[in-house]
Image (cartoon, rainbow over all chains, first blue to last red; front, side, top):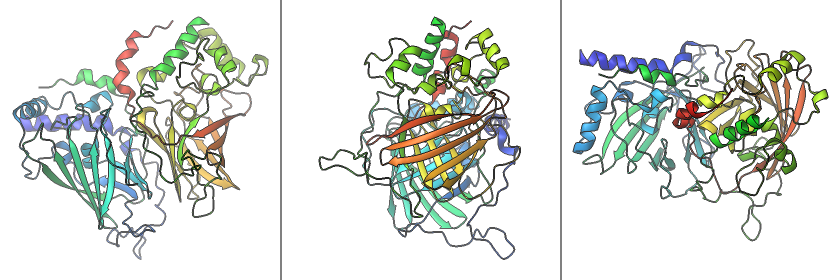
Length: 255
Length: 277
């Protein structure tokens, strides 16, 4: 019974965020992508490269499965929390995710945007990757120009991200996060000490394997990782999704 | 009149909350510099691989002339260092004498009757500024130009829009949105962006000039040199204006800084403290 309530909570939040999802007014075929003889996108084609020989992550992507969006421990990841963090996580989960920033239209942070099953566009340039999220119409930047992570002075939901290439894997480090964001919908805590490492590997044209590693000794007893997947979304476009339902939070009843 | 000035100030203050939080002072890589290391903003316009001007960079609309800004917000240009807006941000019809205004008489009468506070600004609810206001804001935005698509990332509300340059046409009856649907093409060295599909909820300026869903916006981006861009905006909305009209914005490259995260929704609780008639 509790589980179904929790799913209902997720469903409410999902509905709150993706209202325009069914408005498929954009059917423009994505130019320049590999296609099979019958014209269908060839998602098993090799991963494209940029002119400097690095994998090109550009394109529209979608989370393959929203189970990690709900909870990063899905699939057997062991997340050992310090007592305060465990207490807070349990409270949030048992309270049906009431209090999540998305109910006030603030949206998501690094890990829950990564795992969300709504569209996002990667725009890769030599110096920066921008990720445009359909949900909430937000974006995030990852600097690739060799700059170091700054000493955080102004914590934020999205933090500050730098990336570097390890072979064909883009390794992104993020700090400067605030303690207001939740790592997933069930509420694994994020703190100002949270360090997130994302390892993006574009396996072929249509698939990215993404490993998320959380290191935060103020909340977790040891670093932990979740392995998630992104699928290429051909012939799609982002639709403007401005969150206007901030009044909904008054209706979130909790437990 | 006094109320109106207060309103404008509130609008300005509500938005650039992070203006003083300069934690990002990493030198912008790859920009031309003079021998003393300062950005050379009069260097020539960079070019993309296809030979077209490359508009990429961090830009911000130049503040209006102090004597005009003073007219709208008396005492504001006292050297406090706050970012001042363009005169068009304050009043998109700033160039017109009242008797030459392109505002339709029925729309003008409504505005006159109710004043700019006849409706609550979308910003008070943390809704978007929308186009074209967001591009005139006293806040930076980043252009990322790629073949087929140019993205604009706005610091305001951490929001973005996409301009398709892959040859597609404007959609016929798009779902109305705050930022519209944009396609662009090159006219010589000028990127011409046409946008339609707006909702009728965004304001054109802080004064409260509204528009209809029929509005079409044409922007002409011309990067004059490394540090300067001219953006001509033409607004065509026969349900609001008697004729199309244009404004010309000067935009300045912002070196050695970057965008900050800005979520207005944190301040959404402020709404109840605003007074309006």
